[in-house]
Image (cartoon, rainbow, N blue to C red):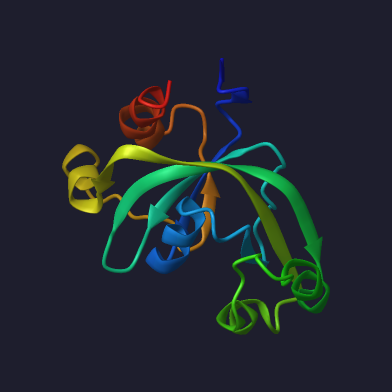
Length: 156
């Protein structure tokens, strides 16, 4: 099945700190940076469902992964820190020292009509834990079937 031009198996759930999630949905942050160590990179064109961590602790929206850049952290940094990119110095502290890093170009950011809190999710799926960084949603994943699929329908 294809939803918004993306097969359902190309959806990722990504934990993002609230200030960066807010910047993405305000269209101020153009790239999301990740260390790559033991995880497969996100695929271009995928949907990234955003779990805003910190004091928000909610699924808040999604964006489409545009260009994916995978390289040494120094090269990623040199590529994505142009004026207006929304990337600040604290992002360097995050990727510095990694063997490889990934920059995901943020395209089509969309907030869901209402956030779904960690408490709400745990009422539906007891014991559910958000990913530390990100994870691919697998076909039949309970979170996708019971929560995200419904949220995505609200965007139609």
